[in-house]
Image (cartoon, rainbow, N blue to C red):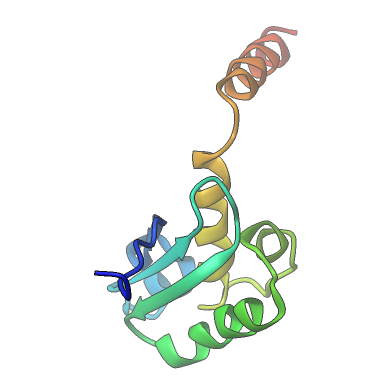
Length: 117
């Protein structure tokens, strides 16, 4: 149908069971899910389930409104340990999934060299 548009996206998720603040408060359930353009850090949408979801969502809303991508969120200093750190960790998952394979090989060799030095 002419009015339908196919929207391609990538999904990045972060499980709040790995968030230090959630663990400390024994609220380590839920997740952050972000949709981006394929191969780009442009945020198309976000969904958050769990404690403080409304507070966490505002950072993604601001990023979408002003065209700020996940790389900028990753480069932003977040207080630790807070629930807001989940947004940065989600951006880190996205970045790790988009890093070239040769980078991991180089880092592996570097750390092996440092341990043996």
